[in-house]
Picture 1 (tube, helix red, strand yellow):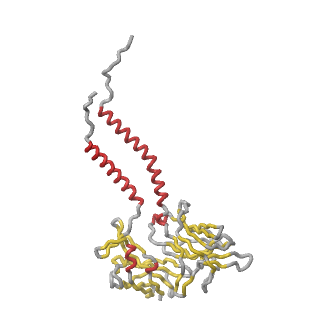
Picture 2 (cartoon, one colour):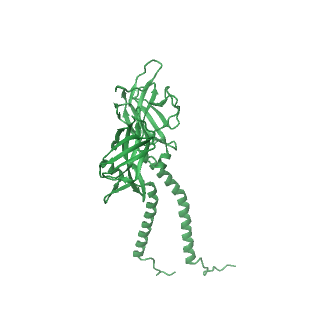
Picture 3 (cartoon, one colour):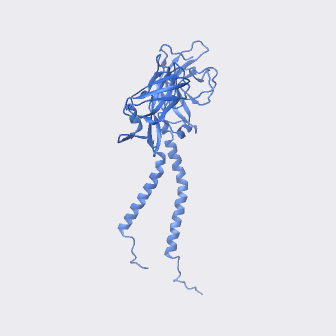
Length: 202
Length: 158
């Protein structure tokens, strides 16, 4: 027996169909947004998080006080076979970072360069002061100070880097709390032999 | 099937498309606003400008002296830009340290001389750099702005 096809079968009404379509669209949009929003946000954050620190750390070219003008961005040659080159670097920090931006900043990275070689050192709060090869300390700090305190906003500090190499250039890069080193350098400076009278790095 | 069913008129369709585009643009703008840093503005006279532009026009003199057990900072505003205060920085051996700041919320207007008390640990003979601080506005709240050190004044504490 052949069943008769029922031609007057009714589908869902147009209103129900429209509502279903709208619901389907909304759920699809929500689903897509839950993937796309974090992705875009993360990428935007990553591309903008270094912007506030772009020129935050700078090298001071000369230090001027009431007794004269000095250039501590220089090196001293080893005084004996068991000593190293001492390289002085004057780093100053900018002002007007917001509290949140300050919280996200861990310190900076110094990259010492010469013709074919380079050496980098991370300078962060609490880093152990060292006067041996590869170590860094703050000029003028008493020997009792064992940890580095990096520049607060507006401060300038002279760091002394101890190395077996004599470097010609130094670059500075911001270091964020996430341990990300910003790609764009904040500043760079040439290093010459210390020649100003009164400049000592020991 | 009803073949003479009519869709939306082209005018309504265009209006709807424009509305959707505008709503999307507003949503994206509001969202992207979070990523843009709000500028601090300062108004002098009727002129509102980014606050850093006013640092160039600052002209002031200052003295730091001991009176009794307190350190006083005397500031004379000789320019046209109202000052909020100064940041006190001490110059040491190849270093500059921030000791603190002294501010006057009512502002140090043109021609005014004010004497403020500092809680900073200053010693007689210290080589100090006093850097001007301005007061501006950002998102309807007051915000201070420390000018660059080049606008500061060197003084010796006496």
